[in-house]
Amino acid sequence: NNNNNNNNNSCNSADIGLQQNQQPPPQQQQHDDDDDQKVDSKEKTDDSDDDDEEEENEDSSSSSASSNSVQVKEQENDNIQSDVPYEELLQDAGLILMLPDELLHSIFEWLPIDVYGTLALLNSHWKSLTRTEFVYKRLCERIYLQQSKRKALHVSRFGNSYRTMLEQRPRVRTGGGVYVLKYAQVKKIQRDMWTEIPWGAVLETVYYRYFYFQEDGRVLYALTSHPPHEMFPRFWKMVIHTNNKEDQNDKAAVWGTYQVQKNTVTVNATHPWHSVRMVMTIQSQSIFGKFNALSFDKHCSSASANFDEYWSQDLVDYKVPSEVFQFVKDKRL
Image 1 (cartoon, rainbow, N blue to C red):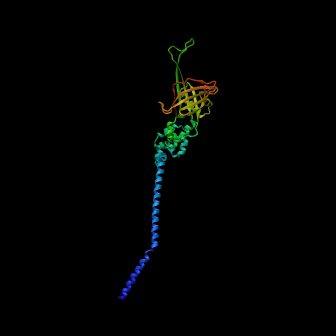
Image 2: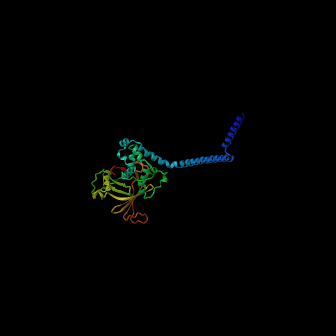
Image 3: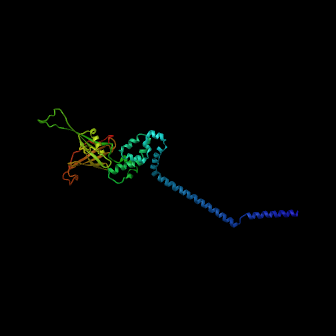
């Protein structure tokens, strides 16, 4: 019995020693508690930093949402063609849309600006290609930098939208047609012994003025009695510079220059005997369409090409008709 009691006591003392060895000393336990508190505080600071970063990202995303809206629209338009199957794109739009967009726009630069509007009416594929902010920017550069003789475009005045600029800023139509003014006047017949005009007849004089504007700042001007269906082929031959010298030196029309300032266009042309200057106003809205009419405001001439109202010695002012120039389309032009 004594031996058993001794054994039990030794076992109990051994268990107590093991428990004492397993428990960490008081100083080490305190250090561990401090480390846990530091980890918790670090996690809290990391969470607060993450929250601040999320708030900053939200603010930056909200501020840049308006500026990225145009880019998102352009990407959506660009993705239309990529999502369409090859066979459908080939059947609806043709082989030409297989070319890169940059190459297509380089080809279209040789065509009149109104071609973009016609292409947008074909189908959705051509519409997604031609109605993007990138296309409107290139069109505005082609039109306004040449017509106004400026070096930069102030798109901020039109809400940073080149499409709005193209729709609202006055311009003259270049290519695809000619501005035509028809003037008719009934004259009184002078009766004398050599008059062969019968009694009751009416003497009417009819003449036409033509303005064929080019993108490079030049204009073909003509004052003639020939109607448009006779003059349009002659304009076409003069523009393409055929090998026939008679077509190049057509006396019915002369080359001049023009410049657009706000809604006023000024044309200067030189004849062999004198120079002429004509000032017109671009009609933003008319029965002929947007920018399709020009009102005649001033017409003068000078043999010395000096159009100063105060210092010119040979300046002649002419009475202008009340009729307006109407833009007439022609596929050959």
